[in-house]
Image (cartoon, rainbow, N blue to C red; front, side):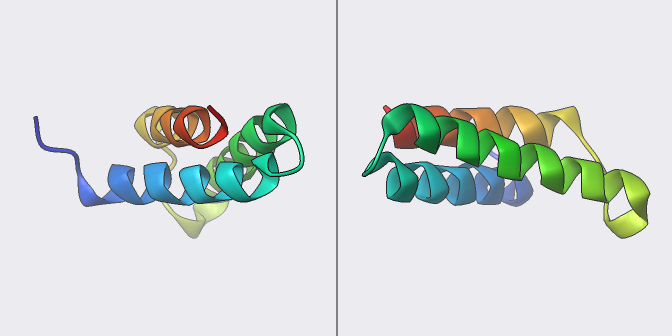
Length: 68
């Protein structure tokens, strides 16, 4: 299965955010990454990109892997 470059970018960025913040608290790391991903999708809804549920799902995957 091939992952689209855009989705891979979402996974990587949320993974990185979760890993960095999880040094202090894994739960906080997970939710911080999810919040950043959600805010990015909300920003996209205002014409700065294309909002996609798939992007948000990729954010959740990255956050889960990074905080786990």
